[in-house]
Length: 112
Length: 113
Image 1 (tube, rainbow over the protein chains, first blue to last red):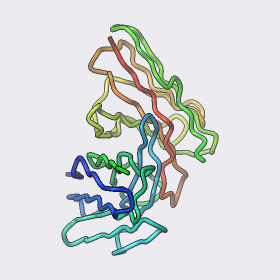
Image 2 (cartoon, rainbow over the protein chains, first blue to last red):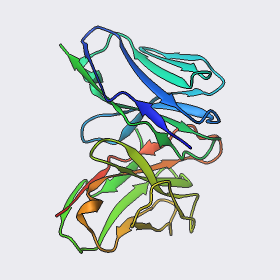
Image 3 (cartoon, each protein chain N blue to C red):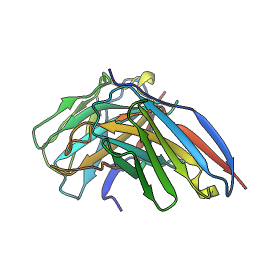
């Protein structure tokens, strides 16, 4: 079955790097995503990685995928107070249909 | 910026009332989705649609129903609201083939008292 796990909380200081981790059980997923949810808002796609890639970098964001261990991580460099939010990893299968299975969400708190 | 809208943003309603949560998108997307978000943050798919006149139940069982009469509109209805329906409901849409992103509305926070 599908099961996606994340740690619930992460607290960092402004300027530090943040690393949010995610483990999943279904290795047949096609894409893995990181979504951000700010208070009172919907979800915003931050980045995604195709399942046959190991790493993807997009400005301050670095996604690492270890398929053997079924582990996905999101690194945010130079974390800012505006990065405080809930971060969800998610997986999907195939393209064109975004039936997403979400992780439990990690609440990131960035202190000045 | 995503053009997907949900109304109302917040709703407090009494037990037994019938409610409809609205979701509209102006992007011409065929596929639309409803997710339920627990107070503890987890999101679960409760309904989805491939296109007009297509509706399917998602992974999490829900007493709500949906309809898809028009491409742009995907309302969710609860015939008789109960406190256990208190949750945040998020609507999303995606393009057809090759889509790698779902666009989310801002959500409706429903409280049933």
